[in-house]
Length: 144
Image (tube, rainbow, N blue to C red):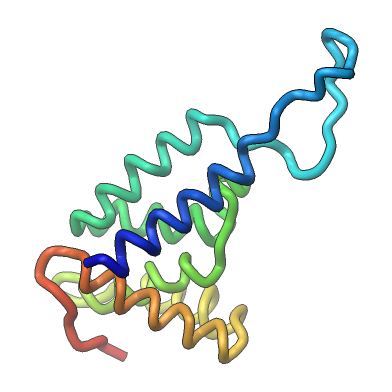
């Protein structure tokens, strides 16, 4: 449970750090110059946080949405993380009731197997184990 909390805290810290750019005090009022990546709205982060909490509580629909957002859905808001997105896809396949859908399996193939390097797949599997341990019902044996 501590591993999951630490992982979630680190992940949310990374998201917050990428969003906490102070406005340029030297820029004239009304200037809209952007430096670096577009800022993520606080609203999108709040929506993602609520959705992630539902996913961690075991809500399959929320898990699918979190995986979608992290894999590049929602225009990259919150910032994407292919490894964590894949980890959620592994959780979905493992915990789907009564069984994973063909769409779940196709998404795993597309967003995990085809896009991630072997080391990233290992990291996603480790993250998925941590997520499953932190969810109600504990860790289960992955269906592959």
